Length: 215
Image (cartoon, rainbow, N blue to C red; front, side, top):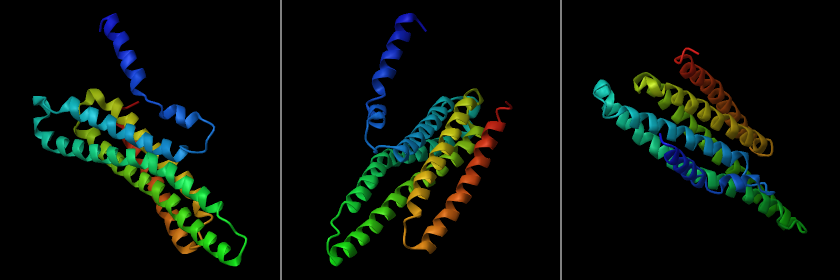
């Protein structure tokens, strides 16, 4: 690649980052870790799509092309949903803050405030739970892609797998923080166990992908 082309690429990449990192760095609590976890999932899906595009159309991988196209389509949909979850996570946090700010001067206000807090907290759990699940869906697709995709891009699959794992683990931190305040302890404990299983499975899958690189 020529020096002008490299310079152009640097400019394009710099400009394409947008202001998400600046929003995260600002002195506000949202967007925070939950949104960043979802963004890691977006990046994982994007890397998977890249590997599909580097494989599809090559005669050597013609037999796997129908499945590669299906994986690419699934990754596109998962990435699109995670983009929405970036904003939804920030919104769910703001909803919790608003609920805690509700007046509590009378008994009626206290009752209403408590109910709204529980509703907001459940939303703050539901969003990262979906982030984790979508991240796990991506990770499973990447594990398959490591076997049928272009082996020259295996390192990209491995990076994507680790990013998907971060999306799952990062989402679990927000889930855990909010579960402690959920009044329905049975539901909270069930969610906690489900997340533990997902975290354990994601670690195994990510390590499985990495092992295929023989590093």
